[in-house]
Amino acid sequence: MSHFIAPYFITPHWPAPRNVKALQTTRLGGGSLPPYDALNLGEHVGDSPQRVAQNRALLAQYLPNSPLWLSQVHGTRVLDANLSQSSQRSQRSQQADASFTQQRHQVCCVMTADCLPLLFCNEAGTQVAAAHAGWRGLLNGILENTLASFNDGPESIFVWLGPAIGPAHFEVGQEVYAAFCGQQPAAKVAFTEGSQQGKWLADLYVLARLRLQRCGITNIYGGELCTFSDEARFFSYRRDGVCGRQASCIWLE
Image (cartoon, rainbow, N blue to C red):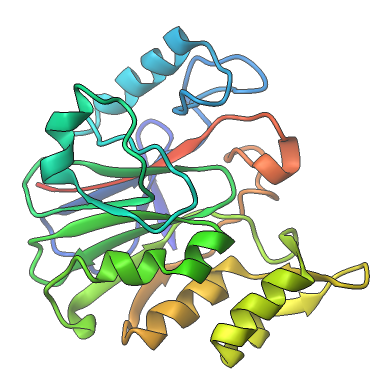
């Protein structure tokens, strides 16, 4: 389960240490016009740069610092946000799909509009991370790489699964099914046959849980929000094509 906080954000319901803070934006509360209405935080989707800047300024009121905005490429690179924030001033784009920090008030952040955002923290409350995982990232190891940034054992790591496209709406081809099941036969439980031959409905949440569990992670939370079906609250690329992006943020207080 998750809880709403002012003005239109969601906060994860998980047993993270008290100094670990996180929030998930929705599409509500910003100033962008259709089809980016309203709290679009993505600069790369065709929205007015001025309106995106205003939306990011709105979000900044609820954060201790400016987030490290990544240039997400469906890859497996994980950035140390402590080292990358200074270089962001000279190089706006940081090509990566996850970041981590052990520094207070440094905000790790990923943007999504159907892909799965994951937030990580350790039981000691000394490190956090955020990862963006579509099927390519999941398959190629973005979660494993993010976990490798922690020095903690898997029993001491907590993971929250944010809003992503639900299993009733995420259709993929035979090659995706074969790739996941070839790596991990247990992944078959994450697929059901689609309406057309050679098509499958994939459950990103199940695929992520299986990958995390294979790494020894048992403290997994969230996974109940569908971006595609909840048009009132979330952007969805599969549903709308042109749309905004919501953000998942985490930091140490």
